[in-house]
Length: 425
Image (cartoon, rainbow, N blue to C red; front, side, top):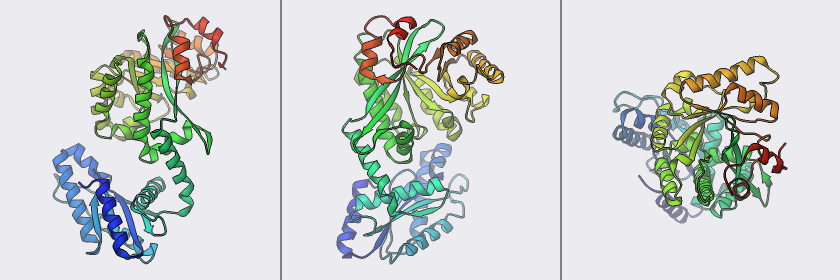
């Protein structure tokens, strides 16, 4: 499998040799290849990848070059493309080639490619920019549900956003905020959820609701997760003692599928001297639905080492009891849309109580998100909910401020916390 540097070298060599001739770079992803590896083993997956590589090459002209770029991705160099239409014809040929199942695997397997296309020199003067813009077109094709998309120049603003976020991550210019998580039954601090915050010189304060999904749609989500993981653990490691506190870190479903993620987290815990029991990995319900088998394997390894596993935003997605039976979770976080309605909607209150009871019967702890007032907190205490967070219990604040405020001594009682938390809603 060729690495990025080699692919860039080949594209740059073609630029030098082509003397300004227009050509296309096509980023192609074959999503089904990864599933073959997971279901039948990596040897079968590699064989299927080789077959897909050969099929792509056979479907194109002899002068076209195909590079294997990842487990399920390829880069195609298409010389002498007079216009975007010529590149689209190549995309059509590739789509037609994959209409038949791949033979030679354990069983014939139907895979469908998705492609993004960038043209030289229209969309960039060199390999790096051409590949990035082809990747952006690929992301756009996946968002639209289309088979191929040509890069559109108005996406330049998105690219600027990408470059600035990447530079901010590399230069450690984001901040970690901690939001308190309260033990509702013992009425004391239990820990915090780690949240990323970004103040951009060009865009000002950028909401996580904007830059986190953007990261997931690009290759930045792995970089963002590694930054969040290490920065969180660096702050936690500064505690004089862990005092039984636990710190939750959000993991994207896309990150779980990346090789080595378990090793990265366990390695970071060892480097910073933080016990696995002090960390909770939070994942959304969509993780259960999108790739249950792989998620179970990855998260079970973490749970077996003592890391907590929380299902975030529970109650608003598609998770079922059947999924929960297989999933190695230790905790359910009940979505704030349900918590905010328990005082005004009796049926929602019954649903939340049922979720809490079900979780306890399955030996899972429960955390209520979005507690906005004392009456909601009291009702959740009566329901037996274990933990809670929300503006009533504490707003997100810079990690250093959180540690200075809450952990200079034993975990403070809620009454003391409420007297000092002037930012509380």
